[in-house]
Length: 252
Image (cartoon, rainbow, N blue to C red; front, side, top):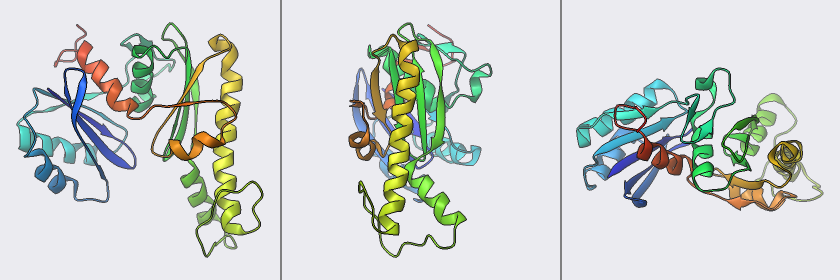
């Protein structure tokens, strides 16, 4: 069994992989007492043979999770960093390590699952977009604030925009709360649709479009293009990576 760790901007997700199946899963927001919560939960889990993690957070939070894993399972975490190429995916970045490992692993999952050529969109704290060719070449992508971060940015930079209520998505808003929510979500949707239009030619004209991230279910109905919701792409990509790399990090 392999314990897989996905340290995202908003929360920590983890799953115990046995063969090809996730037999146990869990998640905690970073506002929780992560070390304590993990110790309580993991002491009831079987001891994994390996622990493999991917992180887009700071070293302090990585250390917190590593310590919890070591204390509970007496295992070190094998951290995956974005390489120039692995698992059939070729990184487009001239400095490969600067591509978020979450984006790289999502492409690993897409390639292994037969979804390439494709556009991969993930909506959470950030909105990320990547184009993956049929042969596994990453053609590049975009990064923008996620819809909730857009709203926070407007509120933090203005004086008059102070809604007194929670807004709702509307085609034509007649109040500030609805206008802010609607504008930010529609801006995110428009960016995804525009990226698909720009990338389609390089992807053969008819790429599949997948949408992941914590806010995927809200964004999906706003898009002009049909999309497939694909949850847990980082954990799934980690599973593929772990199957093709030894504990020392060498390719098998």
